Length: 540
Image (cartoon, rainbow, N blue to C red; front, side, top):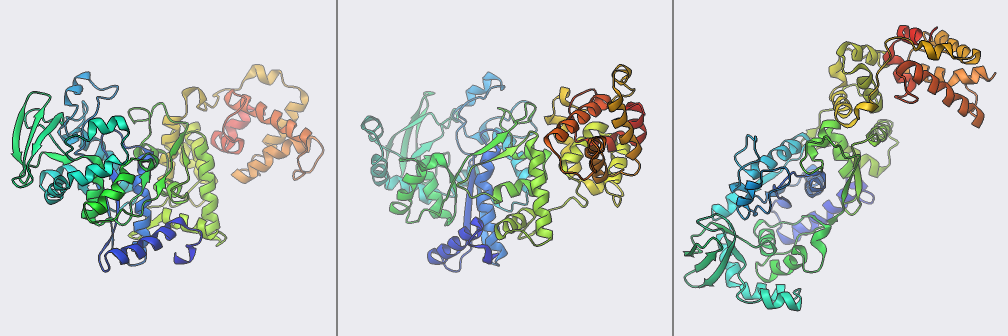
């Protein structure tokens, strides 16, 4: 994909990262990195933290270079609060590492961190994201960063001087006294409500007291129950891991933020360099589902993958530069999104896609390791949604309709996984009062009230059903009936008057078929109802 560099943001970053890696560490694997905190549901905004370096690392691997994507699970972070919906007694764990906090009630996982990591790990596997996971609990507890911690403590005055450049006068008075970049977890209560009271560089003896009343002196050269504070921890890892590329959110780019401060600490203290790091923008949601499985109402990647195929979700992140915000649809907009996706697929197949479109599509449907599983015979998502809505998931009815749409389809498996995603969308995102229910018997009162023109229109429809029994044919038929009634050819260009007549005819059909003024696209609805039932319900 090197020839798409001018229009493809992933290729541009890959070029830059490869060049920078060669300057920093020639001949060594190129390191891209992400970090996620499993303090709660890991939402679709957090996914950009992973997808951005994944796409760049994947492009580098496509070019035959050795590249690793590190994903740091910040599971040694403190538990900050018991969220809404959780027993208030969980507040007793505030200040403990996330891996030391019990999982929410009913969870099969051993800790709070594992409970929230699990669905993200599963979603990343479905998305084809290859990475090397790092548990910060395991690294800190194993003493992996011991030399870096001791270095940070020796250089605490230098670190404090960097931080002081961004302190206000008020915080300078409270933070500058006896600064220590290491925060121990209390040996007794396991929380980080501790204050370091003394430290000796030669012996590495560190004394601390905890709000629980406990205090002790430990040798930091042997102590593995604590961690560097965030603004020191992050640059330490950049240097330790040799990270060349790592994005970060908008909040990390304000004055005094960890990204800005870390960019100075990494060189002045740890002898490393800050990664190439684009700032990524907000990911929004349209029609956020009330019935989302996410606690707190923010959908997760797992939620999105229930209603859309993995390549489509990948595409949303691949087609926009990190600096561009975008929205993920959980409402009716998902149908338009799928229309756009299918249109792109047709452009790719006919070799009419623009270079940037082609690059984003290729990144969506396959990785350096191979293609993602496709739907063998994809039907338009909006059509599938209408079909499963109308049939209420009846397998035989669904297969009958899909065979009418695609004569070569032999089983529902050929329409999966897209069919299952559309089914899940209807089941979880469409309100009960918006579901389509086909009438079982004709609306006699409405039929009796129709005038002669309306009866004639219905007869024209019924007379053309057999000849036009396909999605395209029925589209021509329902739009053509008002044209014929107006004395025009079926392919006549619509006028404002004709459009009004079409809308009136459509509303009549909806009322007769489903007792509403609107509903699924009429051609799909007619196919789903079946020709015999249509004749019965329209009184012809």
